[in-house]
Image (cartoon, rainbow, N blue to C red; front, side):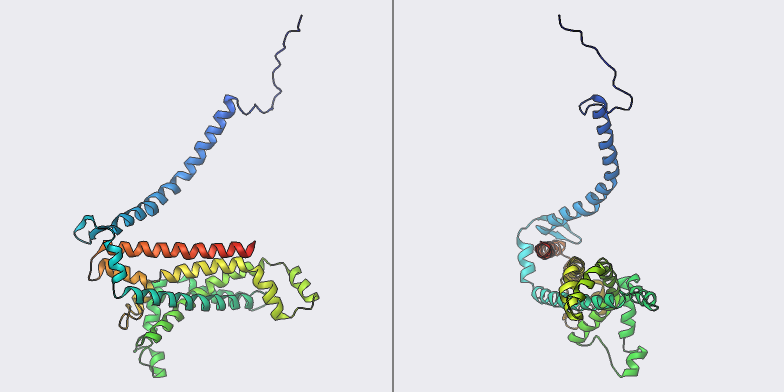
Amino acid sequence: MAPATTLTKPPEGATAPPGTPRNRKKRGGQALTGWAYAAPTALFVLIFFVAPILLVGQMSVSDWGLFAGNRGVNAPENFTDVLDDRLFWPAVWFTVKYTVVTTVILLGLALGLAMLVQEANRWTGFLRTSFLVPSALGLASASLLFYALYSPQSTPLEFLGIDSFLGTPNAALWSTVALIVWRFAGFYMLLLLVGLQGISGDVYEAARLDGANRWQTFRYVTIPLLKSSLALCAILCVTGSMLAFDQFYILTKGGPDNSTLTIVQLVYNFAFFGQNNLGKAAALSVLVLGALLVVNLIQFRGLREKES
């Protein structure tokens, strides 16, 4: 005769099997807690990011006036009108030129400043603060400050005998680049400084023992180990330059003779200045978004390949 099965009570503190109702209830409560924490952020993204993108997509294929509203679908007329506009390709070329110039100058200067203040000494705190202070100023406020500086009535220009820094296309471009470099160099310096301080001193010591001079150490040690920080700065700089608006709107209004008209200023002109065509502005916005995605994907792919 088979012995009777004895039911024993699990010891105190023992974990219940995963499939028990108690554990399922606990996991369900944890999931609800997680969803409750994520819900405000998800709602914010849905209202202020996803919904506007969907609306812009609808506007880009519609005959949508600023005052008349939606007058029906007209795809792909808005996109063809944008590409045929006489200011589109000059604005694209200027935006690309401005992006390249700004990115190269900003990254080079920021790296130099970061290496200058990398080692701690009696002036390090003062220099770091001095370089970083302009980044605390809003871009619109900085643009107004430089607009006053560049005006013909400003004391420095009168002293130097210069009529204006904004009177010619080249002068307007380089004057705006000077503003952006002054405003953002300290910010990118801080990002690169964090990357530099993450490089172990043992690596530099090994390079010195192998007979590497300063240039070789910079080229074969600092730059390879700083690629992630440089890539981050490049992505931020390229994205910000391609979306440049405030500085040119305040300093040049796209002039002289539309020579400093950026692609985002053209979006503004389509929507509010003269044409009042939100559909055409939305179509150009979709093109800009697509260009940004392509550029950022190329940068991320290049970064992954270099890291691998």
